[in-house]
Image (cartoon, rainbow, N blue to C red; front, side):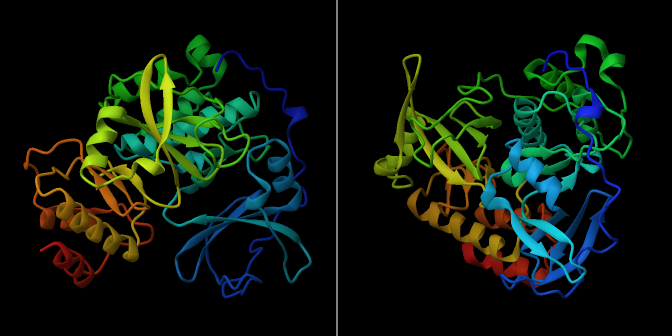
Length: 382
């Protein structure tokens, strides 16, 4: 992220025809049978609603803004749901699972989570690979597609490094430093990312990433032409996870780690791709980001009630296959229905304690669970 000069006249959208206070009414049944819930955020450029069943959050914008995002490569066409409301306004709705973040940038806070911080930084890196110049302080973090969607308003431009520092802040204070005020240190890159994490006492593992921002991965991930890397969201000595330009993750595993999982029946060789980086052989797996893929001790994916029971079942299934595995620092894949352990020393939190902690503490997609839900999940592993 080197020197960028913003010429706002090139990018600002005329928002005189702004969204009405409520572009959608609570209780509206969309043609796909989704029932609109409450409005949870709004600005002149966008509105965010939940759904009555709590499964999605809805980003609502005027058609012109959505088409600009599409034109500039921020989102795929499949993300756009075209809808005309009762007032005749041509709108576009983007559906985001409630377990993922859909939120304006200046209100984001990681609350000490490295995974949260890296998810946001990956979105910033990808956004800057697409658009160097536009201000992102007024942007919307759409975790589903690993991107910050700009709103093209005249909001004061803030340096990318300051935006990232704000996400790491422990309170609602906001650093509004511009690029000019921060000088050569204004950009967000691997060095400044580490420095900002260090300031809030969050350490990044001393592991070199295998993939770079914007790198094509079609050769070993057969998901469709043009899939590129946003950035890493998890680095570990045994594996690395990358967000991509689509709604998917790439999991790269050290060969020895993958082999141990295959030997124990947790993974199948046939599902894994083979990758080589400078003579280092890795196993690759492409997984949907609609499901949790995270370390148990650094959780970020919003937990739903069904997700709580899925996690408990994954713990039980993993324990049946690996009686001596340590699970409190394992990698949890909701899509696989398993935890992928890094050690087998038999130590760590008991399964019941682990499930209780996860379903009690969250984070949650909507709200904390009732005690009876927590107890029901714990009983699965007792």
